[in-house]
Length: 202
Figure (cartoon, helix red, strand yellow):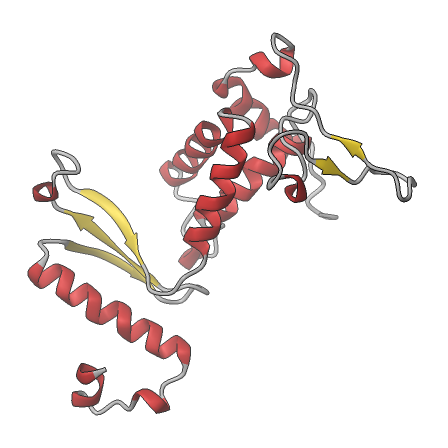
């Protein structure tokens, strides 16, 4: 707040988004000038402004610089972590498949929100939806309302049933659905969104 005031900006006159961007810039300045981080790029045009920094090897995380996104008061990272943790408790392949999909999207340059692409969180949602409905076998994950109750979550049935509920059951041990490798799931993921989704109606 002191730096904003010295710069001629009144906190009371700033809207939340401008204040968020100012906080990111000030924190970035400190991380770069005193923390040894290196600035890589900024993305302030999206719904949740952020910067990408390179964490130095001196932090002891790795023997090389690691890129990391930095934001202030953005709820999406918490949503992503909670959703992915809940999905992984149901099926351990969920996290691995999400990482593969997100890396694939990154390597092909189609996950930059500033360019109009889906952000990484969007790719996470697409992956989990595929595991719910598109794996060509039994559903690997329940609907989202079933994520809180990991063991036998009750979900609403489809069709015209009213009032009744059925219980989602994970794939039986040794079944085709349970034995699908992450690589095969990724192949089916690509096929599902290429052939199995009518993008004109969805």
